[in-house]
Length: 156
Image 1 (tube, rainbow, N blue to C red):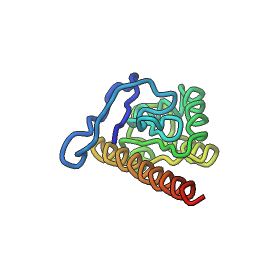
Image 2 (tube, rainbow, N blue to C red):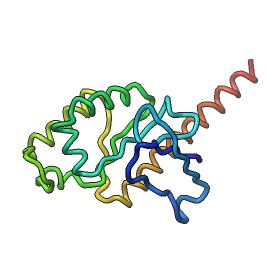
Image 3 (cartoon, one colour):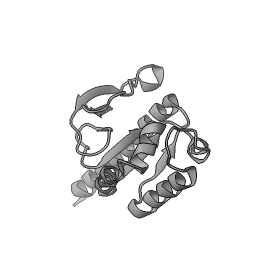
Image 4 (cartoon, one colour):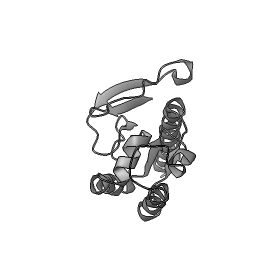
C-alpha cells in the first residue's frame, strides 16, 4: 500500500511501526486532501485537521475549507480526520472567539451539505491509525471491484 502525502502537509503522519508493515509513503501534490493512495488520488482522500486548524476552517478560513469539502464530495470516498474529540469542540477546548455551539453546528452543516464524514479520532496517534484504516478499506474495496470486473470480462 503506497500512501501519498500532500507536499503542503506540515505535520505528516509517518505510518511507521509494526501496524503499518507494507506501507510506503511518498510525498506528492494532491488536488484534494492531505492523504491518498498512489494512482487513486482522483478517487479517495483524507483531510487531516488539528483542533486549532479545524476551528480556523470553521471561521476565518471557511470559504477555502468549503471549496476543499466540495472537491472531496466529488470523490468516491473522502473524510475529514480530526486529531481531537467531539467533546473538545463542544467544550470549547480551543483558543478562538468561535462559540462551541457555532463550531458544532458548522461541522454538522458541512457533514450534511457535502456528505463528508468528520471523524473525531481523539488523538494524533488515533488519527494516523484511522487514516491508514480508511485508505486501506477503500483499497480493499477497489481491489474487489476490479477483480469482479476482470472476472465478468473474462466470462464474456
